[in-house]
Image (cartoon, rainbow, N blue to C red):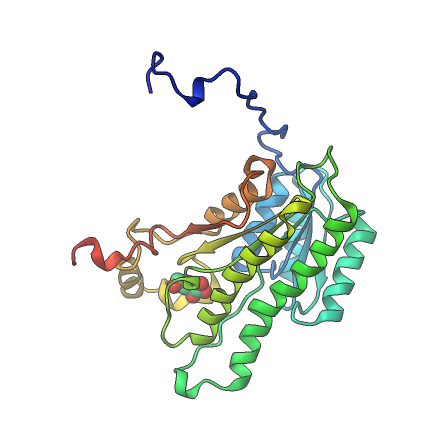
Length: 291
Ligand code: BGC
């Protein structure tokens, strides 16, 4: 649109655009964040990324106490942030309740929850055990339900704190490209992530009137221990790249930057959205040359 074109954007009767007041680099200054499954992989990247953006961080873990403690030290070195590690199984209701209660007691509140903890237990479908099914659904889906429910209870009770954020709280569900891409040999995992996608949207719809935002990030292939087989040899990496139009593997920083934005007031009007951070993996890469 050139300067002479009349249009809605130039209608002076519209209210002025007011940008949310947040510092550019420390967008999350003093906001209290819980990152589940934060001792390694994507969770580790997000915990550090949010810490560098000024947040106080609870590093939840189930295994890897030393790694969790190292992340705590990293966050604390970012400029006076508070942080501690908390061991809890997020598929256990009592442990989740206790984790949130401690966070409210130690930090005086909860502003952001990153539902990241997740695992894979792969098997051909006809050999998949009920235990493999239940474990994956229990952590990847029920765990996100339990943590989201606890967060919403707190966000509703406390409401918007205008000097902290435009919203009463933010929940970010870490899903996967496999919330839309079927995955043979990983039926439990794909089912859990498909569940996360619809759970996230339904919660978002329900809690929006209380100014609570709920969104998801769906990573593609990110260089972490969970998928080491897919990137650790040149042959495997070349195969993987056939599925990634952008022709590089994702790094945890790619996901951390998206999480900082979705957790900050810069995305205040975004709720119920899934952000695919996948180098184009969901773009039907087979059609680059076929079809
Ligand atoms: C899985 C990885 C996989 C990636 C892309 C992720 O959700 O955890 O193992 O490499 O999706 O297929």
